[in-house]
Structures are given as C-alpha cells and as structure tokens.
Image 1 (cartoon, one colour):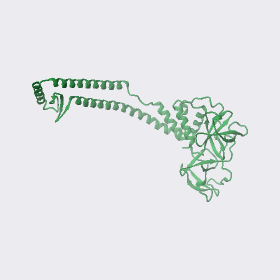
Image 2: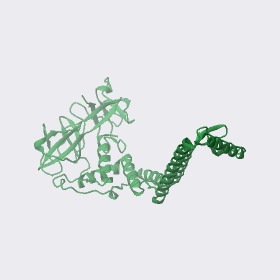
Image 3: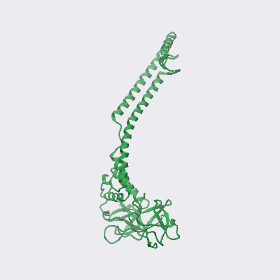
Image 4: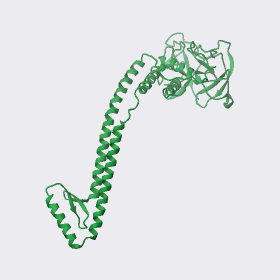
Length: 370
C-alpha cells in the first residue's frame, strides 16, 4: 500500500462517515479503486458495515434488568433494617428471655437439622443468623450474597440474550463482507453508494475525466495528483515552482509550489485553487525509494527514465540492466551493470494493479529518499 492508497482510503472513510468529500476526491477515489483491488475491497467493507449497524439491546430487556436490580436492592434494605431492629430488641431483653430465645433458636435448629440451610437461628447476642452446613453467617450478609448472585445471574442472562443477537448479526455482516471482498477483486467500484458531497472547493480543480496519468515533476521527482487542498496560499511556505500545463491543454507554465504539513507532499497553486500532490514511492529492504523522471509537462504524460539512464533494448533489460531480485512488493527490480540496488533501480513496465507504477507503459527509475 502506497501513499495514494492511504489518501484514497481516508477519503472513502470520510465519505462513509457522512463527512464532506469533494467531487474531485470522489472521482479520484473511484478511478483508483477501479485499478486497486485492495482499496475497492476497503470501500465494499465500509458499505457492508453501513448496511448492518451494531445491534442495540432491546428496551424491554434493559427495563427487566433494572427492575430486578431495584427489587433486589429493596429486599436487601428491608432485611438489613429487620436485622438491626432484632439486634436492638435483643439488647433490651432480660437474661431469662434471652435464655428462652436461645432455646427457641435451638428448637428451630433441631427442626431444620436435616436441611442444608437453616434460616431461623440466633447467635448468643440474639442476632438472626443463617446456618449453611457447619458455617454460620448473619442474615444481612446472607441477603447480600443472595442479591449479588441474583444480579450476576441476571447479567449472564442479559449478556447471553444480547450475545446471541450480536453473533447472529455479526455473522450476517461477515457473510456479506466476505462476498463484497470477493466481488471487489473484479474491480467493481461501489463508491457511488457513499455520500460524496461537493464542498465547492473543486471549482478550479483539474478535470480528471480524460486524464489517466496525473503527474508533475518537482526537483526531478515525480508527484501524483491527490485532490484539492484546503487553506490559503498566504499561510503556506514556498517550496519553488513546478512547470506544467496540468490538464488545461495550454502550454506548460510555471506554477507556485508550497510545502505541505504532510511529509512527502507538495501543494501547487492553480488559478486560485490549491492542489495536493504526493511523492510516488516504493520500498526495498524497508527503505523508501522515490520515482524519478524526465520533466513531465502536462497531465496524460507518463514518468520516464531520467537523464543518464538509457532505455533498455529488450523487455528483460538486455545489456542495460541486470536483474537484482525483487522489492518489498515482490516486483522484479533491475540495476545498472555492477551497481547495487541500494543506490537506485529500475522497474519494467506492466506491473500489476495497485503497484506505484501501475499503468505506465515505460520503464521507471527509483532512487532512495534522503
């Protein structure tokens, strides 16, 4: 994935989120996705996701959960108050009465001896307790444990109900998404389904309908047109000039070029409009190499070999180039005889869709970015 893919996918994401995308950006994205299966698949996935929003929990389920929690908390408060009242009453009871109460508790214990849980007992202070097997805990703590267990069970039930719905809908999304990705390999563009909106900034932008190659050269490096830039030229720093007719059909003219906040990009002024251009690059050995070319004076011209690099006499590089392995995309690269690819290499025409040199009928030359 190169810088162009990243910029196209960023525009697609903005369109899918309902944000403004210029008509020019939309057109460029559509043209790019017609050539790049990865970006076309990216667009289709977003379309599939928009058709299937994340499912919500049913209101009735939420209300049942909240009502149950409220009931449990109310019961806990009543039991706590009852235990506290019993403790206060016991503190005021004479010793004989206390003895009688203990006897009553003992009788109750005997009555429930066969059961695992005994609810009708009091400790030596007269506080109501619960016997669970051989353990004795206060009724207050017992109620708290029961309430916690009930809440946990309720959460599990709600989560299970919601989980089934989420998994069901996720399966539907996954099925359509997989289908979308498969269809995207055929290059079918679905960007028309995304809400592209013209923000009025593209009035002076190039018309890309008839231009396939949209390049300029700046300091011998090749930059690809990426869309209209926002802002004002008065706020930018001058980088130099670019000589190009763009797509006007007129003679090439010098145009002001400015530095961009985005690394590897320049901004060119054209009749009051600002145009974004991105450096064309590829990687080899995890290092970045920029495309170099003879001067490109208008849209529609393809990058060519720069001065000093002769055109090969055959498709395999002939005596001009030696094959030197592949770059990080697996594309065959060629060097000048006796040279290392680290200093620069050539790529033959006919690279696959999505390659930085895709569509170019000529050999291209790449040198390391300083």
